[in-house]
Length: 429
Image: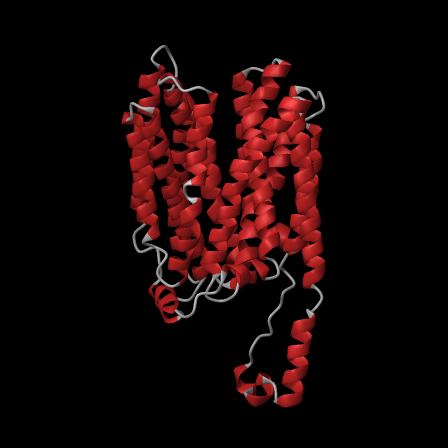
């Protein structure tokens, strides 16, 4: 079946990702509450959360390599098993070191699932469908992020914090297991055979990172994810300082997630209107201004408007950065490039909260939002600069084309019947 011919696989992948992401989003706060019930302090909570993000860093590139030269689909059930097992075993753990280990297993499972799923979308989508399909794929993540914390909050509470948090983790493990029901026949035979036929020398990581568009895509993705994570972590602190009830803060964060889903539903017409590079530049710039605006003492309705607009803007970065990295990466190294993008995301998840904590301790609780505004402003500049570069042919390409024209006839002249379509880098950032 040709890429893009039947998108039933994409719907099943979105459903599976919704359950997998929902389980992780439900389990992560539950892990913190259970660790607190076991006597953890703030430092121990930070270590447990850090293991979730740090442990998969060592596996990202090897998994990407494997997927470049093999099938994507086997990583999906492996990821579901690790997520489900990590959640359930965290619920039965009775020591902090065990909680840290199972948190790392959960993070590794999430990484396996995401690398396999993103590589599947890249491989089974026609080039002109990648922006749309990555946008629809990330709706699964947004749905999970919307429902997971709400479900965890509904289960956790009362005097028995250890018991209710354990129950939430067991439920999260069961939710992750539901993803199995959507993974049947999800990879096309022709795309799997093509990946096997394309095996060859491994492209060095340095060459991937030097490919025009890859560093920019990684940086934009890191910035957007860092903004989402810090917003989730520090908006409750802002609410505490301004006397806003936790239930209202929860609704505000849900509004942000809903706006992100809405953005991804209308991503295709936005791309037709502005193009990928311009859309990334504009949305990162608006998100920078909105993040900085959280430092101002705006009323609750103003926060709601700002969060809706911010959620819409942040919804653009992840799917478009995936397409950017995929289309900019060398042939035979696209899954590795996506793994490098995820590595950047994980580093951002570790470094950004740490930096935000230092800034907040020195300059006040609103300072991390100003820091985020600066980070997103730099991302906007990166997108603008990269789009300007992509509109100019590189000197190396010009020299190669001139040598080819002087030494031998072009491929179109040698084989006019093939009608090969020229490559275009207009959409790269």
